[in-house]
Each structure stands twice: as C-alpha cells, then as structure tokens.
Length: 475
Image 1 (spheres, rainbow, N blue to C red):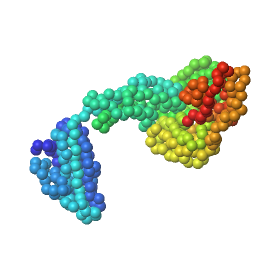
Image 2: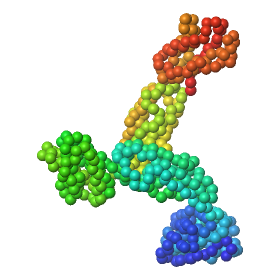
Image 3: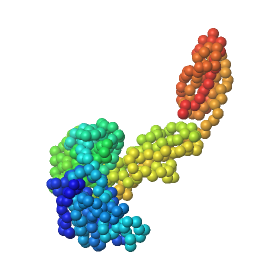
Image 4: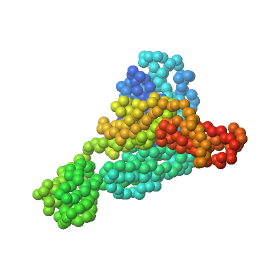
C-alpha cells in the first residue's frame, strides 16, 4: 500500500511492544461496552513508529482504514484487522499523513448519543522523524559522597540535534527541583538527609519530544557523633546500601559491633571518623568497649521499606517584612521528599488554610491582604501521607496613610522638614532641579522608614532662593 505497511495482525496471544522494523510502539485500546471507543482516539506518532491496537473488552472489534463521515474505506487502504476477544494487531507507518480509521461494527455516519448506537473512530497522525533532545547532568560527578544535612548543587545542560530545547527540568529522585526554558540550568537543595539519591535531567524539544539523561548517583551519609559516654543519635533507622559516618568529637572510644557487623573495630579512635555501609536488612547493635558499662551503646536498624518525612522551607518572602495594604504578596516554598515525591504543599496563615499547590514550583499569591499580622507556613505532604511544616515567616500588612510634610525650617545644616511614614516602608524624596522653578523633579534620597516620623535634611546652600519638594512611597 502507498501510505502504510502492514507488519502483523494477530488474534490473541502475546505480542512484543517493540519490533526491529519499528521505531516506537504506541498502544491504542479498543473498549466497550458501555463506552465504545479507541483510546487514545488521536494518536500522534512519527514515521517508522507502530500502532498496537489491543482489544480490552469482551466485545469483538475491528480496525479498518476509513472515516465515519464517508462510512466506506478509501483506496488504497490497509486490510481490516479483526480484534476478537483480547485480540491485537500492528501497523507500522512509513509516510507522513493523517490516517483515519473506524470499527465497522460500532460506527455510524451520524454520531449517536447512547451506547446502543456508538461511534467508534480514531485517527493516526504521522509526522516527520524528530531526534530527541540530549540532556546531561554536568554536576555533581557520579558517586559523589556528602554528609547530612547535605547541600547539593545539581547542574545540567541539554541540546537538540535537529531543533531547539524548550524546557529543561532537574530531578532528585521523583522530585522536580528546577525548571527553565533555557539551558544550562542549576539548582541548590539544602538539608538533604542521609540516603542514596538518583539525579536526572529531563529535556523537551520544540516538537514536544522528551528525553531523560543518564542518572548520576549521589550518596549522603548519615552522621553519628560520639563523645563523653554517648552516641548521638544512639538509635538510627536506615535502608540497605546506605552509609553512616561515625565521628569521634572527644575522648578515646570505640565503635565495636556486637553482632555480625564489626563496625569500626575494637581499637580506640581518638578524634577521627569511620564510615560503615550496611548492605543487608537487619538489626545491628554496637558499643564502646571502654564505656558500655556506662550505657555507651547504639543500634542501627536497616529496613528495606520505610517512609521518611518530607522537607519544607519557605523561600519567599523573607520573614519579618512589612508591606502596605493594597499590595499583593507572593508566597514561595521548596519541598522535597527523600524517598518518594511531594503530593501537595499547603500554605497556611497560622492554622487557616490559604492554598494547596500540587505542582512545582510551589507558590501562592495573597491578593490585597487586609492589614494585620500573618504567620505563614508551608506544609508539605508526601506520597506516603507523611507531613512536615516549614519554619514560619511573619508578614505585617499595614494600612496606608496619607503622606504629610510638616515642621519645615532652615538651620545651619540646611533646609529640613518631617514627613509621616510607616515603619519598614521605603520612601523617595524628590526636589526640583531648577533653583527657581517647580520642575523637573529629581530624586534626592531613598530610605526605609525606621519610625512613624522621618526627618529630611537638604544640605543645599542657603544661597538657593527656592526649591519644591515632594515625597512618595516606593511601590
């Protein structure tokens, strides 16, 4: 046929999702009743890709090239593919074009509103071949080791062999930590707890094709300090293949295993560190052989599956700011889940919910908040229903008052006057540039009010005959 090549049509049985003759295999489901449909009804693919139709219902279907508008097959056309119970069929598309098709058993020229008279149609849109973009993690290096709470700077770049990169995203595990429309891109995450992390970058090109970089693996060691007669923390839960850095910060001690794991051995370790990686699940006790009688004992519990709490931090605005009434305030937060992904970030004023954001970047704009004091937190919930709340930021919204200039006087230091102000707000004082006229105005000083009254002094020589002043609040 001129527009498509039939690769294979099967009735039932198993069918691989990839063929040496095809590029990408895209699955389309034939379903019904009660809803007779092809899903997706519109399949957008590239030259060389394959469509795999799969019957997922107890009703027989077929795939026949044609359209509902005509009710007949145009010529040339591919042979009818019979999809009996759970049957499958393949077509690989070799040419650019739009290929409508129907199920002859469940199609009508006029669409019907009920399942008894369904309209089961679909279309395959075939575009030119598009090479995928090429993202790559440029930093950190594979196998980088850090110590909790770790600060990790992740960088990536991306290029596209036959177009341009329109979006680049950075991921730590399943957490998106940065997104931009340009390359390169960097992000810094602070407070990473112990664990093993996989870093990836995802790029999208100008034709909508995506690609994910090769992963870079980073290990963050847990930390256990020992000093005096104690280990801190004395009990720690981790996952297999994760590591602990035991750090002696004072005295002659040992980190000696009492079970199968030797830990750091039985020799005293003055002011040094010892790293231990736990490969298998289990319970691993340890002691200081010199001070175990004084309770200097510890325990590492290695568990294959447990859920760590997410992290949440308010990134904007800064705490203890003052804003005038009538001004919008944008709240921003970072959230991260060490072993899953963030399901939602909930912004709150005290205990009052403000907004729930489920997509990165997490933000919310308070529109024209009335005067008052706002104590804002971000609550992050992970995919395992654990929650953590950020440290609060305090925002004071003050009512705007009319500016008044008063108490004008000439002294040895120059001309002076006072104006009323709102503490924490910025004000601009301007004066006329023309010694004997009103305009033009030029800025003289910009400052942040420290109180309700601000004194301005203009050191202009007394020989100046006249000057006009004005003060306004900076937005």
